[in-house]
Image 1 (cartoon, rainbow, N blue to C red):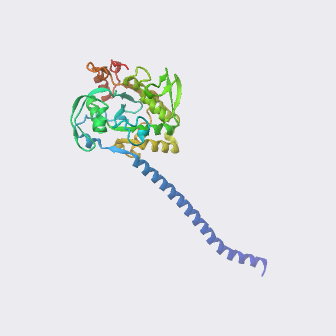
Image 2: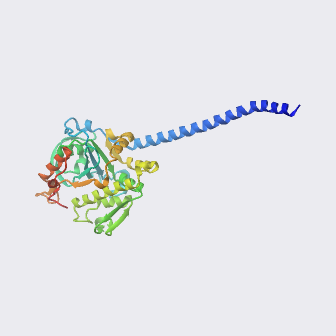
Length: 356
């Protein structure tokens, strides 16, 4: 056999053997890619389902009924943010585990004007004496209306939907959404960020088991951050009104930290934040999914924490019980009217007779 003939023979037999081998290799590569895709999709679905399952929700329309304020400015948003001090479960290890029940330790009505480029947060002092409307509690039982009850008692007696109804009755403003984060969730969010930096103009004494800090800048972990926002007796005049200033300061610092770290643009950190936050998160039913929360967060992207205005609801010391406060008029009416109509808040509406 000549060399050319042998070569042709090898090419013929080799050709028939090479093509099946190449096809097998290609099939293996495609199979591996398919498995990787399926694995990634499965992990993504697991993560989505896991985070979705973390979120508790309340149907406000069902819980409150039709007797709610009408929305005045369609493009504006009003979000009631509650910090719950329940000592149940993981929360009991964080602060005073022997205290029963739960209260709205922090309450802020956040108004985002049409265009969503800025925001105003109005803190409602928890010691404010208010008229509680008739509500249904979590078991569907009727809780009668009552006058001169402390604002933070509404949550413990009738739940978050009644707090929403109370705020709507006080303000005449339709609450579009509510978000509640409890102790454990707050701590987890801060730790997921790697801490939050705050700055004090004067020392915090650590009275009654509180946090002790010198004046100046401090990087706080989740546990210390929780002590910071709950400090009452060790800073300022020791009042609940003074604590509101610390809570507002910390909220701004945490939002700035999220923005500085570009946490929303980092998938790994975003998942860590979401997992920590959603574990102790309750929302209205319209926000009770990752998709809804992500869409809402995206719509709020233009709001800069540095331009957010923080206000305390104007209050005056109660004449019967000086340890309590009442809503100050006409300041409060002016404040609510401005927010309801998406207008600039007049300076007179921010003047609280009880300063804290």
